[in-house]
Structures are given as C-alpha cells and as structure tokens.
Length: 193
Ligand SMILES: [Ca+2]
Ligand SMILES: [Ca+2]
Image (cartoon, rainbow, N blue to C red; front, side):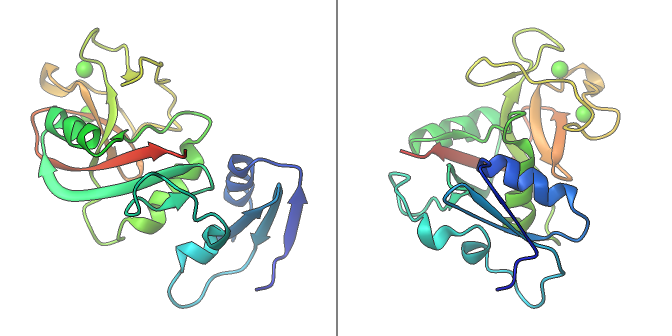
C-alpha cells in the first residue's frame, strides 16, 4: 500500500485528526508512533482491519467479539433495540459500558463508526450520555462533562423537545438528545486491558 504522508511522534488520535484534516484522506495506518496517511480514494471494499493496522493490534479486550480500534478502544454495535436504561445494563452485563465519545477521542471514534455502521442503515444508536440529574447539564456515565460544542451535536441540539429528551443518541455521527424511553440500537465499548 502506498502512503503519501507519514508523520512520526504522534498519538493515534492525532493521526485520526490529521487524516480528517487532509482533503481526500480516507485511510490511515498507525504503528509505533508513526502515522501513515493514504491520500487517495480507496477502491473496492474497505478492510478496517488493515486500515487501522489492527493486524498488529489484536490485543485483548477481554472478549474476542469486541474488535479493537485505533489501538486503544473496543467497540461493538448491538442491533436489537432497547430503551436507554436497558441498553446501559446490557453493556454492563457484557463487561463494558455504553459508548462515550469524549473530546480527546471523538473524531477518531467518529471515523471508526463511519466505517463499521452500514451507510444505508438508520444510524441511530444510544450513547452513554445523559442530563437526567440536572436538565442541560450533560454528563457521560462516569460523571465527566459533555461539552455543548456544535462540533459534537447535530444542529439545534440538545433541544430537550417535549421537555423529555435526557439521553444521547448518535445521529448522523453526532449527538442528539432523545427521549430515553425510545427503543434503539446501541453501542458498547470496553477499554483496552
Ligand atoms: Ca434534557
Ligand atoms: Ca433533540
């Protein structure tokens, strides 16, 4: 595979951001602190294992059915539909948690999700954020704050429509606040061990 750019001494999230920032970049490979950018359109099907260098990163996420992405997190999508609280429990029962997309890994996870969620499907999945405790104070399930930055949210959200949107769904690969009672697909993650 031919790479048009390589940068050393970066972390994998910077590599993802670099790819995002380069027009035409749709592949990157990260290995040994070096970021390799493929700056041309891919043809045929995309092999995410090769794309993210996973052939070198088949490290344990405790269970084999959670693929490791970006060298640091393990993500699995669940296609059965559950309300937010049930989805949260299902992730816990699987030894993980509903997916977080914090500011230091948002763009990398967005890139991963762009590739593992089929384009034609309804890309709506529960994520692990809510403002149940205090309206408008958005928190991940570990208690950390979620910024009201338009880079992360879909336009005009969070909207708290109907006064009852307290859970975050992934929509168009961004955040939308939604009624926690709705049944949705969801995404769990495990941290690399
Ligand atoms: Ca709300
Ligand atoms: Ca909303």
